[in-house]
Amino acid sequence: MRYRSYLVLLSLICLSSWGCESKNEATKSPLPVSAGGSQSSSDADGVLENDTDSAVSSKQSADTESGSSSTADLSGRITLNGQIPSPRKLSITKDVDTCGAIDTIADITGSEGGVANVVIEIKDVEGDNWTYNDPADGYVMRQKDCQFRPNLLVIPNGKDIKVYNDDPVGHNVNTGDWNKMQPAGPDPIVRPVEGKSPTKIGCNIHSWMEAWIYPVQNPFYAVSDEKGNFSITGIPPGKYRINIWHASLGRKNARMTLVAGKAATLDHEFDFK
Image 1 (cartoon, one colour):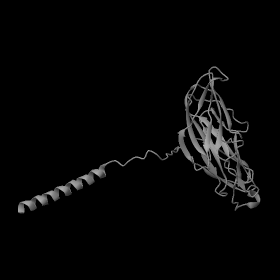
Image 2 (tube, helix red, strand yellow; image 1 turned 45 degrees about the horizontal axis):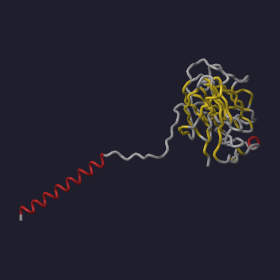
Image 3 (cartoon, rainbow, N blue to C red; image 1 turned 30 degrees about the vertical axis):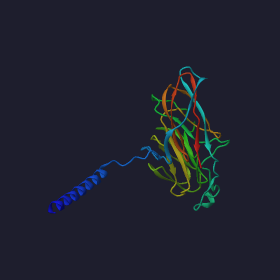
Image 4 (cartoon, rainbow, N blue to C red; image 1 turned 90 degrees about the vertical axis):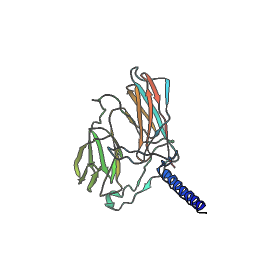
């Protein structure tokens, strides 16, 4: 009887030990990794809202000649899957006599299904000392009716931006990196633009004011027109990552091989629901 009780007790001890070991092993096991979901990333050199990296389908037109036998061309169209939203209403609460002239803002613009103000930028082109087709007056952003104009300004990295205040009231120009009061008057704020990512510019006095500065590293970029069309010419042949960016729709990436003497096509449709 004592021997049988001893066996039962020994069995219970073994079962208890096995159960504890099993629990410990389960704790040590790696957690399952989901196969779905989304992933986002951001650039450390600037602010980029709604930033999403993903592949974009593209096609190479092998039977189309470019404008030069030694370089490549890239063109295409940026469209929207959905209706372009109506302009949103602004809450004008300060300096109404000056700022109340415009009380709506369109975050997405375009026509015939196309999206305007999309930056298409070819990244990591080898070389430096690029020549840019700089505007005669430089890279200018103005404040008029308490709005930044234009609301997107593409600037070669290292070039100066000139910010003017055409309003009779003072503004505050804030990019995060620099923050400066600007009274009414003809003198601009002049600052070099440095970085690799789009940066939002705002006004702390009039909170609804915002625009974007987009620094580029080479002259091989374009901004889509009202119908979403764009064209970049004279590109050195090679394998490239191409950024497609819009302030409200985010960023997509494409990877393409551009061939000397050939014209490539890159179309992209943003989703908006």
